[in-house]
Image 1 (cartoon, helix red, strand yellow):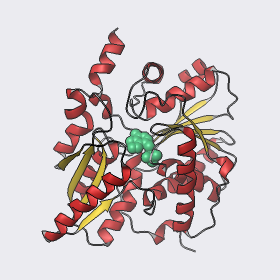
Image 2: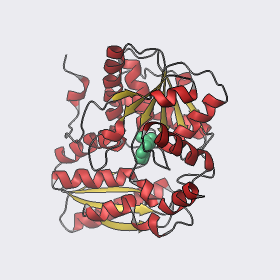
Image 3: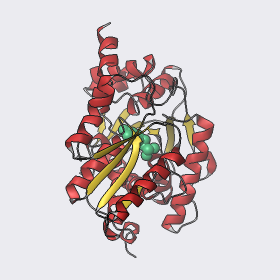
Image 4: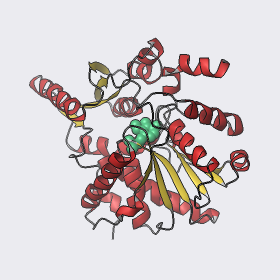
Length: 341
Ligand SMILES: Cc1ncc(COP(=O)(O)O)c(C=O)c1O
């Protein structure tokens, strides 16, 4: 039987496998063995988890003969920046819609980090005034695609809404398979995988991949970065169902396997809090590891908080570093003030 992935068109965008490496200083400080799965090292324009996901969207786009990719996200979205890089690599045009999802932003937020990289990568940028209107953002992208069609172009839209097939999650089914091979070679089993949970493609992909490839001895905890835990639990579960349908298998993920914590979400998506800044400083100063303020910093803060509160987590803990590091520079003023205070 051919490998499951052969059924879906894809384009290669990533360095793979990404390293799975120990974090000895953090392990000592936190009193629990901690490993890092380095998906910040996927290689495409500063790396990150979205490169794995985009291989399948861009594969689908190419199979359909698209000449232009459209995508929507926050001004400092890593997904948007990664899509712009992928499109550039494949010789496709890229149209990006940047949502005002974060209130009271400063100049750095609007023009540094990922916003700067979008310009460098040649994206055509439009602004969208709403931040929490997923359906509206998708509709605006579809309307933009219609405009392009009238001009004779062949657009391909990467939607946010959960009604569309979760092609991106295929990247994390594969990443789970990759991780299990690495863990077996290192003699690691039965631990906890800790990851940030946003669109849910990473989280659902990992859960499905572990279930399909013999990794059910690993627990998975998602740290909420955008929605509260009950809402995100529903979203992840729904994505596992749609992903199983895409793979043409019964959903292998039992609802009780979907675990979310929202301890460090406040005050909201893309907004800093002291625990996140502390965790970013801890990872940097103990391991030389750079986290971002929107996703990995919040996930690390939730993990550190739980360990310090002596919550029993199955060991070893594997922190999935999903990248996002360019956003650091979009938050440079706030971060600099905190660090020099
Ligand atoms: C750096 C980073 N980590 C994690 C996530 C969340 O991943 P997902 O959207 O697959 O849930 C994102 C989403 O944009 C991200 O950019």
